[in-house]
Image 1: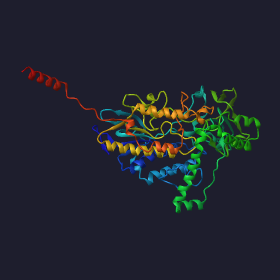
Image 2: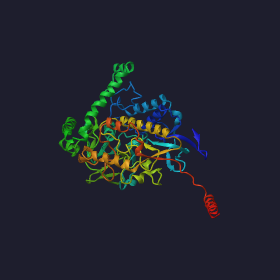
Image 3: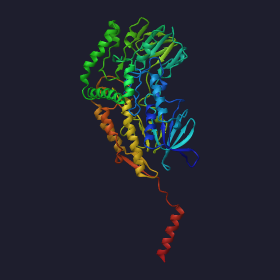
Image 4: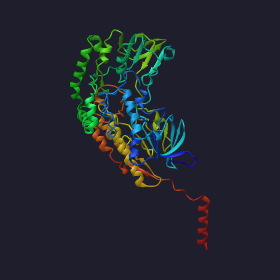
Length: 516
């Protein structure tokens, strides 16, 4: 690490965020022999979404041995699907094991990042100061900034209001009348976790989810001993979990009609727990399973069937004092409102803080929809890479697999810069970005996410799916194994022209010689 000409800290790489993507990038940089980097974290600890989402019942819906780095296997996962605390502990362990803490700048939220076309570096303003970097890796993740809908009259509510990702642990829910807004992955975990302690729970459901049984169990001491003594058994377990999900992909991407059998299993799961035909009708989706993310729970339906729970099959439309009014006109008086309404996925706030070579922000560049070359780099933003960028999400497997593929791309990107030598940047060609995006969107047309008949958070304001990858993780890994420099414009520092007076003097001298 050094300083730039103004005395600011200068680094080779600045990584934004310390969740799975940011810590993974840091590990990969060290493995490539790059130690001149920092990780800029807005909070006081690592963990990203697994630090922020600490609501009751929070857990991952991907098996633990698959939802962990291949280079940092954990033989001691206590359950097949681990809870938030264990995953957060795992990320703390990764930070310690790979000696990343000296590189992490806590309480350093990125306010602005601006490309300097003359210096060929990024000037980054953070909450703790300014620095410059040759390369920026944005690993803020799509599930980092909560999305709260604008509800008319919410300012008139005198009770407690918070989002699931900003849980207020000091507020006692016992005996309270609570409204849960939303039925996504967070809500189906929160509802059964708080149902027994609240006085009354009202669930405002705009669209019912498909819910499958969760094959969760404690991992035995014998299994954990075996994984510690024979590490290849952990790899085999991970490989089996991965292989099963790879085989499922074609049903989502090419043959959605094959998902009918899965729908029947989901309906059977509901019928076992919900005996009331009227409630079952409210909870039965009218779209193809898989169009929205398939949720996993053994306790969600039983909780909804309890006498202190009301399901309002309509979204929240208005608040009058402490009375919540649904779109169908039904009302509920409550003491607390919990929003389980998701995140800014297709309009990530970090995009509004990054200004590229043309003076536009990434948000402005993506006004017609997010797009990036191989899910990583955007035209007009040299030496800027996103981990979990556009069309890298998954509908049925582990995002860690996609992250590791993008880390391969990052590693080769840094190698290519070294091969080119000197002060240099790579700027994705607009034709390459457009070509990649067109191929992805063409494949997306027949997927269940586009044809399943639902409106999901996978779609942006224009109805385009800019979130999910329409293929297998194997295909994505092959597509990101190497950087094709032909897809980039190689940018060098501008060559300074001689002063105008010197040029004039030379022309005058030549004229005098010619006249003589």
